[in-house]
Amino acid sequence: MNKIVKWIQKHQDVFLKISKNNYLMAIKDGFISIMPLVMFSSLMILIVQLPTLFGIVIPANAKLIMVKIYNLTMGIMGLMVAGTTAKALTGNFNRTMPEGKVINSTSTMIAAMSAFLFLAVSPDPKTGSLDVGFLGTQGLLSAFVAAFLTVNIYRFCIKKNITIRLPKEAPGTIAQSFKDIFPFAFSVLSCVLIDLISRAAVGAPFASVFQKTLTPLLKGVETYPGMCLIYGLSALFWFVGIHGPSIVMPAVTAFQLANTEANLKLFEAGQHPLHAMTNNFGNYIAAIGGTGATFIVPLVLILFMKSKQLKTVGKASFIPVLFAVNEPLLFAAPLVLNPYMFVPFILTPISNVILGKFFIDVLGMNGMIYTLPWTVPGPIGVLLNTHFQLISIIFVIIMLVMDAAIYYPFLRVYDAELVKQEQSKVQKLAEEENFESTVKEELSEKEITENQEQEQKETNHPNLTKELKVLVLCAGSGTSAQLARALNEGAKEEKMPIIANSGAYGAHYEIMANYDVVILAPQVRSFYSDMKADTDKLGIKLLATKGAEYIEMTRNPKQAVKFLLSQLNLS
Image (cartoon, rainbow, N blue to C red):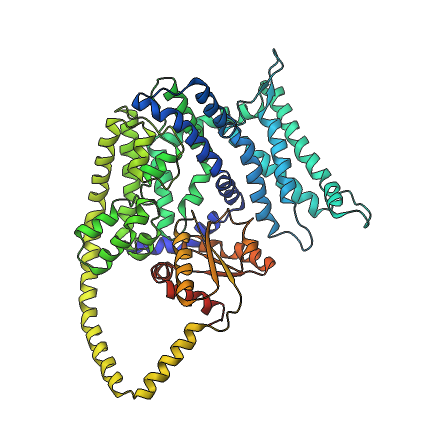
């Protein structure tokens, strides 16, 4: 087991390079930007569908309005993703652009969306009307082509000074518009050319050609081996401390969303939603409770473990893990880079995939038909997504019992080792307490007073004279909210002018300029060098945290404030 861990650690640099690939990061950040659209549109459909379970009939006009909202949000997701992905990729490229040369992210976003339309929309030869079927999830792959092509054309034109130069007297906004004409035109015309070639070659628009070409490959993703590989790799990366979903999932996100939409259409048509490979399948089954399928682990720790460490971790992580925020468990137990936990951390998600797909393929359980927030507790998410099928209740019970059975023996072995360590520490602590007691008795009243005065001075932190705004970032804005809350509580107790907020890495670009300090949670620590380039330009202080240190601060508000001030040399 130790050999496996050492091998993984030895190749950690390779994993880090993959996770920091500009294009994968752009896809991930692009999807994060449009998640409010996805969740809102799915909620509208949920409102339409759920009442029918209880015999409630929604008026036809109201139903049409809900469907219209869905069509004009989820129905144009491809268009939105083309823009958000291009904007995210522009930010990534700008970090390495030559001095004085910057790509305009607003222009690349608009150009990518315009270029995408030429790949996704085609006129009907008979009626002349436009076929907009590829503006939604079916056109996501074309959206990536448009985004990547556009940003690379912009980067080339700006580096080579291919532009229209106006006199110095021209206003800046007008000058920028002329500066972007060539790259904008090249981007759009390139996609026009690609579409013309595809039509001439196969008589179909590029969006459908691309989809047909990849369909045989993507079908392999939804097989048992394909899904086990995807979710197993995601857990493997997390085990070495790298946010696995940010590496693995961008490659299949478009396919997952398309499958969710296909399941919904099958359900509405009275047929069986048969697709297992959906994003909520990952959230509520393969990674229930977070990567590693840790939903049941806190309960196992509380009920069956004997060591104080694991029982405490179970109690502290129970509520967060319930809502799929499992970083307190991952870093405090710890589960990541823990030789005892390697097998269950990888095996449990794979087992859940096999069980879930078997229930869908063989026993008739519905595949996920909505795109609900990942923070919905897993069992509830499964019930909502399957329309409260009886078989889905049975599935959830079997899955959780199986997960507990997989984790239990490994946790017991680890727990036994911790019990031995704690017993050895008891003697050491007793000796230290006796020593401290003796020292205190020897201190004079004057020395005690001086120590108390010094502690009071340190608490006051006179060097912090103005309001300090802090932004805490993690992968999904779950763990970061815990540290932000701790900082605010600590600041209130210490009467310090500190205001902390939380956010998700990738959705921070537009807001971080409003902060004085950015703190990276352990799961996004690998992005430190990229983030440093951004914060340095804005004059923002960037801090990175480690696992145990981070968890301790979320529990101890005073410690969180102390860490912040010490890093800023204000204590």
